Length: 473
Image (tube, rainbow, N blue to C red):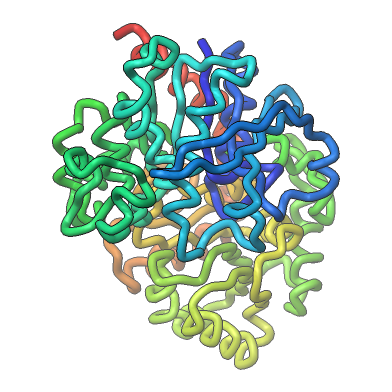
């Protein structure tokens, strides 16, 4: 079985969010299960010279983009056991950022078409092309419309994974022929609510649809979560399944992590106390072992639940607690937490921005990790926190619901609340703070947390089963 994993970003070459983690880790896990899996992605300007020096030029071709043809250089690189193909076009990808340009639709229409065009020129003909988010959403559309009649492509299947349904690739109808290159008679495939919707096209044309957690696959059938695509997904519900993401347990390993203050293990967690004390020191908080330290590593935006946090934050600060906060996002929340850090310097340690080194230190040094998201397709931070013996508090949504169970039943690995309500969240935080005071019980809970297996092994097995089912049809 051969799988080509098509993604707009992948570690270690380019990253803006969780997709890069998945595209860097899942193919590696599939390779360990003797599945032929390679990755194809754009060659961005931001790819480092060190990584570029390891690339091998294969050839160059031209790729149709509507009525014109564009250059595409094909480069190959190996990272560990995984082969990557990086597709070069400086007009589209020689830019300081990955996304956010006026011509993103054209950039990723080019990339999607190039994914198919390169196949005769590489030594890897896939049985399945696994596409991810709207940036690769035109791959199933183009395959069905332009390539299926060619014997070389006839048996190739497509899987489309929705990492976040909020971002659908919506554009005006004027792009249909001139940019996407679709005849008007086929416009219904991507037509949605008076515009072009690339994710809709992928859902209509792919052979299997996956999301990044089982709960999220059910949630997106509800208009509250679907951002308008519930009716399309309900029509294709027989193709839809949810597989929870894993984490890279080599990157997030308290025994070997070079970014934390002191390594520790599941069998000897004494080093966690050192990480807590050093984290408090780094954030200019009083170094107290007895106070619960609540960590937050997140984008500071409303859908991550920060309207709830803002509503009750000062009430929480009346308790004997500390917060270690790392993130950036909406001005409202950045300003709020900055003001709180100045007003309560002994209780709020804040770093605005994203600093990977500090993120690891918070995972390792905090006692509790807060993720009160309004929606969360999968979430990785809660699983990373478990790996470091830091107990998550989450809202029961998406992947948070699939990976964290309330410890009130004596077997759970964290604390959860159901409704999107600030005081319900506050009550859950206070339950965790009370639990922290019971040192014996908290020790049992930490041991339960670090024993959770959120590696890619289980998830890779689920994907393999999905691939086998698809190829058996």
